[in-house]
Length: 601
Image 1 (cartoon, rainbow, N blue to C red):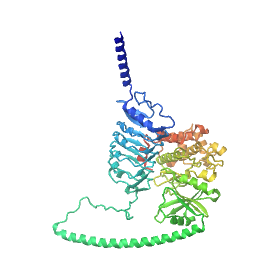
Image 2: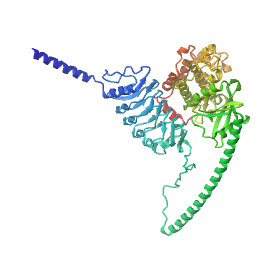
Image 3: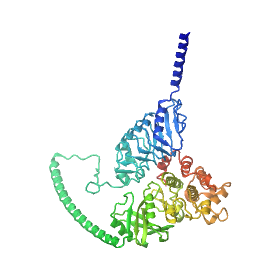
């Protein structure tokens, strides 16, 4: 009897063990749990990633192949995830898509990702990754999209990326990469847009010559023909003599050139020393003079910068904003910058002003105007920015009457890029930054019509020193949220309202307070609301847009309506706005949209 009972107990134990083994989490699931353990999930959005499941296929952000239930996609953008990416991700051998963009991830990008041999799309943009780009990425033969932009990556671009024959979208912009961009394989097919914002890169793709150790631009010879002529024996002696003579002449010319450059360098140093002495004397006499540069982005002597700033006059004025006059400053090497002279009525405590400016100067994003430096003179305070050749969106929309540069695709890209810049201020800066004055004249455009949000942080800095709210309304009528007008309290949601107005301005081509709105809604928000139930398409869309398809116009207007809801609690966050634009307006892959339409704007 006891023996029979023992057999039954043993049999039950075996059945239980087999049952547990059959429910054990798959190897892909185990690898994902290791990934989760290295992440900081502050919002507990990965709470359903649990080891008691047999499969990870229903977990948040995970997609599996229906054929064999292997993990093929990890899609976790905008989740506010922190921490590091675990090397365990390399064990997901069937992974095709990895999207971790717009989070707070840091540390190094694991080279183990290169083990995911079927990977096709890798999105790691807008995080805080450091170190270099793993050279192993060159082994991802199926990769078509690689986006590592807006991180803190350093070092050289691996030439191994040139082996990625299927790669059709590459974005390494807004990092701290350096050295020559490899002109090898697939890398040679990508232009400046893929590398912009890396100030120490050089090479043909970024239109910046690399310099030799002597400081001269490196010029590489180009053969006139792929086939060289073979000289006959009879003429070889003459050719040899000619070559020797030419080399001797070139050597003599090179010595003369070095001597000339040496003398020129000496005189240049003497002139610079003289200017430095003069500026130093002025600073000594006027101790309030001060120059601060951010990022190390201004490769000019302080004396030259101060000299250029002091020489600015009315002929250099390119605009006047709410905070002062803007000048165009051209350096001796033709480097061009915008200098904003702060209105004296807006000046505050120097110490607080400079402390806040240091924060603004540390912010770097492809869709934000780069603050290069600050100069305090006895007569003025001046901010030094990048100069953007196409000017403001306001000017392009409203001042250039016959200009059809802003077609519909260009406007969509401007909306998308502006949203990325504003979302970065709201969600990725610490402390977060509320703009307070979003409008078309504060959206500046470069030669590729890429948008850059300007004047961020200035409304708070120059209107009120309160660290939390502003009690004096800053901004432009027509863009201001109703609650902001009433209370003077600026929030992220008041910025969202202004962005919604900006979207309507892009669609209609009209200013927010156009005279045509007087009879119907008073402003562009009210005007749109009165036309929503009518055949508004023909009346709303700017004729200069070209062929704007009804579907994307309706989507933009719907997003704008959400942003300009009278109740701020009903408005989306800028992260949500960015998601709406990605999902409803841009193509399924925003990167594809940029690539396929970049030459049509």
